[in-house]
Amino acid sequence: MENNIRRPIMELATKNPTPIQALDVSPDGSMLLVGQHTNNSRHPNLSIWSPTSWQHIQDVNVGSALPILMARFSADGQTIALVDTDMIPRFYNLVTNETQIFTDNYIAVQWLSFGHSTDVLVVAGEQTSAVNINSGNELWSHSEKSEPNNAGEILPILASIDSSANRIAIAGGKNKQVSIFNLAEQLIEKTFNTDYSRFRWIDSDLHMKYLAAIPINGERLYLWDVSSGREVHLNDFVEEATGYWSLRFHPNRNYLALGMRGGYIVLINLSGRAYYIDENVHRGFIRDLCFTPDGRFLITGGIEGTVKIWDLEPIQ
Image (tube, rainbow, N blue to C red; front, side, top):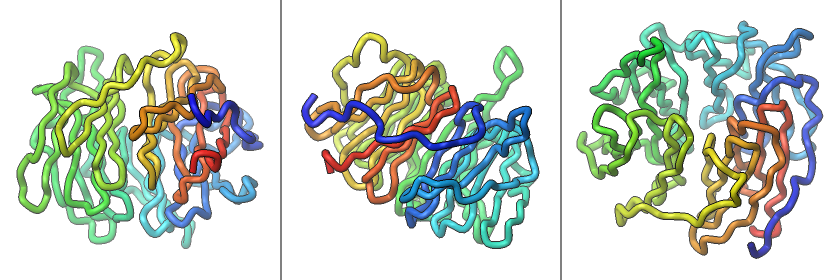
């Protein structure tokens, strides 16, 4: 590993010791969002921090004390889209400090994803759709609905949208495929075969050069070069770094960050196949991680309730 980064530079001084469920940085780089459980001491489940001083800015009262599943900033940074374990999508307006239910049309929502620099939000539950949050217009809806499994749980078909809000990557379904749908032309551009009908994560880099997906059980990572259609096979990690749980692409370089089931953080340079980070710093699942918009910092959150900050300046 060349130019490897061994340890995070610091840890956020969070008062809430519960698992970190969601992390996101506002597009202007001024706010870090941390989503958690609410513990017995009534610490809030959503808080905002400064990505420059790394100090607490404010707690966010979204009108629910349930554990956060996902939380993401809108393109203008004024709205937080979130969903907790009641699986009802909500918006929190940072200007008015008001929370509203997004819509009653979406059931059992467990996944939210904004298009890079767009106000198009992907909502995945019983139905998977892309919606413009300003107009409320539904731009696309997947033809296949998610059916309950043997335990009665709905495991959604996930989707992620590119920076132009023109292409949607869809993971899962009866055909066990990951596909890219062109919104403008209303057709499927590419299809990638997999062994899984349900996934826990899907994401692409800014311009959808690379596409990555993690199956629901976290057993493996799928990574494709979209233009060639070829799967990219990465070298095996150290033996302990098993089980994939979350991922994010770097905002301006060909880097992929992976959060593992056993607490490992992995940062890969996809161009040179070099590993910059391959370290066990959390205890258990890493449910989310994110980069600052300038790409300087990687932020990771563990199920043990800690948020770690990694300085990537040596590889910038």
